[in-house]
Length: 407
Image (cartoon, rainbow, N blue to C red; front, side, top):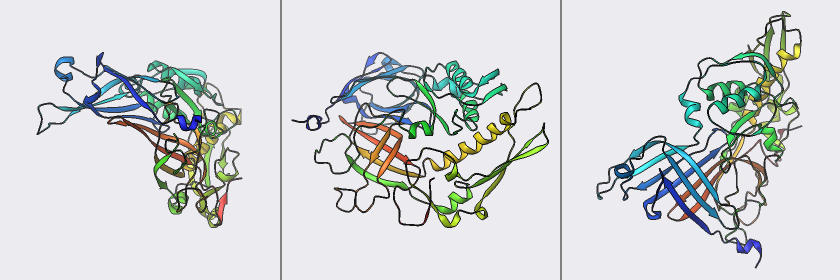
């Protein structure tokens, strides 16, 4: 028997503890754990038929811990610990118990949202400031991709830590002049990563070892797709209005009394791409459809800004980040799949988008190719375990239409 045939998708939910009390397996109805590149922490919820009287005996409340231990065949166990922050109780008209929905999240997220944090930094790179803020919230850092810009002086107002990080990330560039930083939490380690989308597109974070497909020969193939829908396809009016392909941004250097214009189209900026084409007709690839705006970022320092790059790097980072956020998930697919406890948000993967017979990718090769796992929902219900995955890419893989091509 081959390794592929042996992976019959055995799933074991070993233990769930809430505030140290072990939850009976028959008492939960649904468990969801959410990973995402567009939200920095792990969140989740568990629906419990409260036969054990948790609210009465255990008095479960905010800041109590929930521990979840489970595994899939031939893969490492996941032992996860989260903090409960909310609950909802639903009155059952036909029973004597109260169904309770407990909501939980990564422990560091509560301070990241619920506190206001002001601090000043001097001569620090953007990634150093972001690391400092996250560690203040109690987070442990994982992969941190160094940024290019060093800020002479930066002071956060009384913003939440998340607000400050999001602000810094709108103009951060890596040392290869690429913008588009995201930060997210690794489910297994609980560590927070801070990298560019380009870093993920290259596969440096991780790659899935199997191709996602609908009707594999092995019914228990762990990358089997049960259902799939094309979530995003194209909206050329919205794309043009948002400046997805062409932006002109003007900024003013107060110390040299000169303006700086950024005019480079998105497809002319060196970047790692997963697709061949943008979802925009070549008809729109001219200055007539340029999105024009102003930018007011400026270095804060004790002396005049004599190095032009200190100024222009901030503007370049803002525009390149805006471009990246617009085109990186231009194409999205959502699928229900078999599971793999080592699968992670941020992993690069291959998806086959099947034609009418569902057994091979023949007619729809425009959607077949490399994607990034953007969102991952771990759905556990009645002893079953499935993944709901959102895959994202930066356009079409193949097309006979006259579309703008990535350089």
